[in-house]
Image (tube, rainbow, N blue to C red; front, side, top):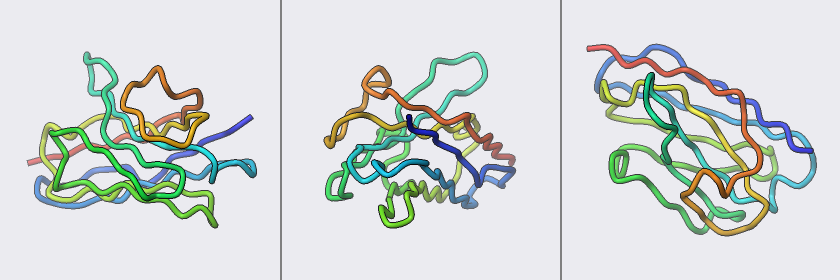
Length: 124
């Protein structure tokens, strides 16, 4: 079983930055592709970014492209999301997710493991 724990959320001003982290338990983190999703109040959970097992391939939602960067450190079993130039519409609960597979996928149904989420609020 894989347990994912996110951290790093909080309050930020528009134009500011936050860095989210997601630590995975177990010894199989390096064999999983990972992703970040977010869910704003009253909205569906949506794809934000994904990364392949070795970090060689990444994918981003159009809404965050050029502002967010996904990365991973397999030695530390940790996934990151660097969020720059934050906008009010980035306010959401952010979830990390792991899939049993090495390639990047954008659909949330492709991911078997989910963290509990970390809240990000962007204010003007």
